[in-house]
Image 1 (cartoon, one colour):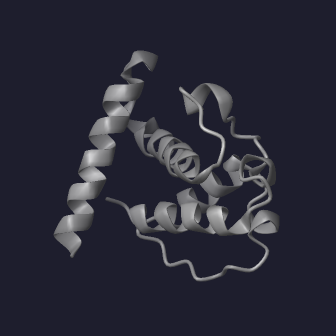
Image 2 (cartoon, rainbow, N blue to C red):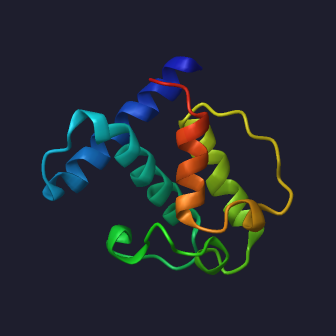
Amino acid sequence: MTDILNFEKLKIRKMLKEKYEKYGKIKKEHKTGIEIFLTVIKFSHDYMQEKYDDPLEMIAPKSKTIDLFNDNEDYFQKALIKITDYWEIDFNNTNNLFCQFETIQDICVFVEKNHKAT
């Protein structure tokens, strides 16, 4: 099972690198923070009802999660599960998610504090 998750993670990292290398070379000390932001955007966009051609242009760190997910906590919870699985974070709290994570930045900060280094 771990091999499948690691393969999935490598596949996503490759896709993110190819898609966003137009923004230039990323310094090593910023790679994890940028990967966190990009994966939060990717998995959030996967479960949002409104789709964008380039989610990075439409979703900002200060974007309100309740607006992005049209107040649908089920979709938001699914996105959070994908994000926490990707970053190997144990997360079982499903109460008041929009209050816990009001913005995309709140999710990124949570991941930054709790992820296991890979």
